[in-house]
Amino acid sequence: MKFLGEQRPAYDLTYSDVFMVPSRSSVSSRLDVDLTTPDKVGTTIPIVVANMTAISGRRMAETVARRGGLAIVPQDIPVHAVHETISYVKSRHSVFETPVTIDPDAPVSQLLALIGKRAHRRAIVVDAEDRPLGVVSEKDCLEVDRFSTVADVMSSDLITVEASAELGDTFDRMTHQHLDLAPVVEDGRLAGVLTRKGILRSAIYDPAVDASGRLRVGVAIGINGDVQAKAETMLSAGADVLVVDTAHGHQDKMFDALKLISQARDAHEASTGVRVPVVAGNVVSTDGTRELVEAGADVVKVGVGPGAMCTTRMMTGVGRPQFSAVLECASAAADLGAEIWADGGVKYPRDVALALAAGAGSVMIGSWFAGTWESPGDLNRDHDGRLFKESFGMASARAVRNRTAGRSAFDRARSALFEEGISSSKMYLDPERPGVEDLIDTIVAGVRSSFTYAGARSIAEFRERATVGVQSSSGYDEGRPRETSW
Ligand SMILES: NC(=O)C1=CN([C@@H]2O[C@H](COP(=O)(O)OP(=O)(O)OC[C@H]3O[C@@H](n4cnc5c(N)ncnc54)[C@H](OP(=O)(O)O)[C@@H]3O)[C@@H](O)[C@H]2O)C=CC1
Ligand SMILES: Nc1nc2c(ncn2[C@@H]2O[C@H](COP(=O)(O)O)[C@@H](O)[C@H]2O)c(=O)[nH]1
Ligand SMILES: [K+]
Image 1 (tube, rainbow, N blue to C red):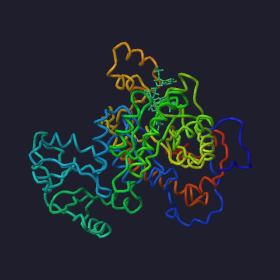
Image 2: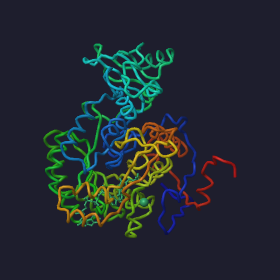
Image 3: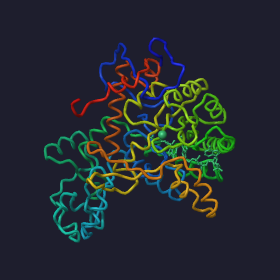
Image 4: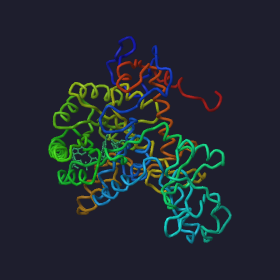
């Protein structure tokens, strides 16, 4: 990346402070852009879901991996639950979506509680042998009493698709029959669902899969407790990436933890032949990056204070505008043959593109994905009927209370004094893009387009070719669309 007119300012910049200038391009289509990441984590788009309890669970992990990204299971989840999450994600189909299933005798109220779990917003009614009997949507439940059974309201003239059917043919057949969704069957039993949108996405994205073709998922490990045992357990459970995550990644305790976790990674590689990348952070300096790489990190996680749930900068004055932090740390990592992830503060597709221009291998997103069907929280409605989910920071008093649940009341109260995050925020579902895949579509469309403006076909070329200028706040404002007249 170069600065326009070689003018690199003496002060630090964040994503909103900069813009990219187009350059002559030989890339004739946005579809010619390959977003496979250079960080060797096995993703085909540079998007990682942050290890936050309100955001990254098994539905999020499966959905994002199916489109080529990766979710990191938070460190606060009990080990047995992490095991279950990994097994669940690995058991999911890489093309068919997981259906919501329901018994024909179940009350409609039960269905209504389940239907928001999946973006396709339908449940498949199945018998005891998992054979589909009907499909039911929220609309079918309007104006019936909540104790009516699913069998009373379902539509039973069912059109199913064989698991072996070719996707293009299925798409045409569904279009012809005006179907948005079809249950997929194998030997008569439900094997998943296909939607027309999902088929299109399967043509555009390549799932992030391991050597056995199963969807990938990462796991976060803190720096406290028996980190070696935790790393070994997660590796044998099938974690594809280990994230060693703490607020201040440039501290002795991190180096002690990283040493043990890197040893566990190396032993796993020696016995299985598979290197599970270790990601460590967070830092925002050249020294922090270099020392983490030298201590064994394959990828360094960069960002202190840009997160939407984060109060660190206001509490402590510590942090660094994220664009400059990414630029400097990426260059330090590259000198040692390593990669970085840009973590936090991403609100628009442009921010993802700018992080990649500055040298990030992938971009970690938390809060933007909190307001989606796939985040783990319950769906709520505000006074105006708008749907939202509740989110909170991992260093908030709420998260600290959860994380320290096993300790004495005094210890817990003392730890909670050091909160550096918001305990409750409302993250609204965008009515135009309520699912995480809708947001991924938007991000990937924006980023592919950025690449063609720079004349780049890959992340490596984009890093090389991007030209970045510094703008005033009115420069930024000029770029915003106007939804009303002025
Ligand atoms: N990217 C960011 O800007 C930030 C991210 N977070 C996220 O919050 C989550 C929880 O992280 P964390 O608070 O590190 O909790 P952890 O449970 O990982 O504990 C951090 C450990 O480091 C010690 N420590 C020393 N200095 C600090 C410091 N300045 N801030 C925090 N801990 C320190 C703590 O001891 P003691 O408690 O005794 O001081 C504790 O033992 C992580 O997911 C992290 O990514 C949190 C803050 C900033
Ligand atoms: N200082 C804090 N940082 C936090 C907290 N919870 C999460 N985080 C960081 O934010 C990113 C995600 O950023 P977002 O803008 O996409 O939401 C996450 O990966 C952490 O590094 C917190 O409580 N305090
Ligand atoms: K912030």
